[in-house]
Image (cartoon, rainbow, N blue to C red; front, side, top):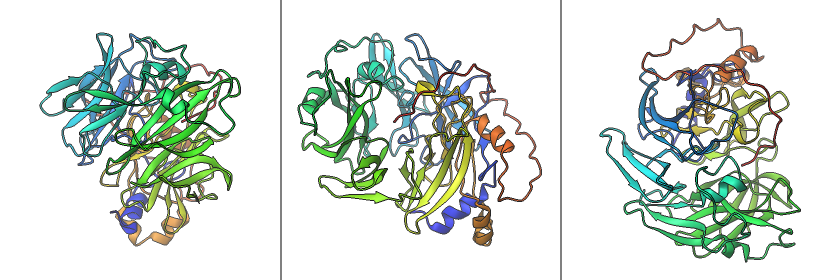
Length: 479
């Protein structure tokens, strides 16, 4: 568990970039780098190595022949990039489900497309030994023995930015198919079993009924701490939803039994397990409208969380000990994304950084920060950059550089002054835009600082540089 003093001293050590904590690039051009989603393990147990993906284009949907590189970044070795492989099964928002196997110091996994099938590679980063199982994965159990997954073919056309191209969906015109849904996958053998079908969820009545022509799918699976239950979002789109969709949040046992509708009100967005029985989620509830809420599994109990200090949707994560919530926002009117920590004990919000997102990063290839933290609680990753940040504070999944921010120990003696200056802990951000735009937007609460010398990119590291692209029409963000 991380103490308040340790956390805040780390945050203060970061310094101030534009608004608050400084960030440093983890990767460089000319190609673009990013990681993936906020609920995946980007850092190894030592907090030294961060995973990332490399792509050579932006601002269009991935096609069947588009290949990205998989690699590992040494955050203590000048950002050295070590190639691990490649994949043809990926998307802009969640990449290829690249992540460390829970508890492992040397094993990672990611999805791929091989011989007309989606598969998962499980790779030892030290020996290079690889084995492939005949099913993709979505979320991994804490004991690293099993996973759950969904139909990435259906996601590719139902929710662009979250599925994989290259394999046609045989149920494309079926509203709620019986033969697809959520599978449980044995990571040792690759055997999988359908445990919840889309048709099964659709048969459970929804207040007011489903809109005419509704087409159903599953998205956003996450296994609970302890591995006894998992969450999934049941979504549908019909005439009433138009280009949008409605959502119900379900929980189920590890075998797919004991289904429970945790949020029936149709607007669940980002969520995270706080503990094996409680879920934090952005949702609509009759009590306070659109806010963050704590949902108590298998009950009707719901509590609003920080309605004044976390007033907008974001990608939320609990730091070890569950006292601190790491969160972010979508771009505001100035196209700034705000990353921050919320102290649930003292009910205070601590800014970490404000990162600019160019207008061309919208819709399917938007660059949300997706903040993540390292196991030691001292680093964070996020994605910025030409839109994809590569590993560090938020994590802009794709183009851009990874960046990191730190918190100085001197904060212990300078707590009051640091609070006044609004300096915060350190995490990692992923894009050059985070640096350049922060430089243009100095923190009004901080004293003038001498310009920092440019960071010399290591010879071994992959490099990423800004790319000018014509702006595209904005599309509403989504989870």
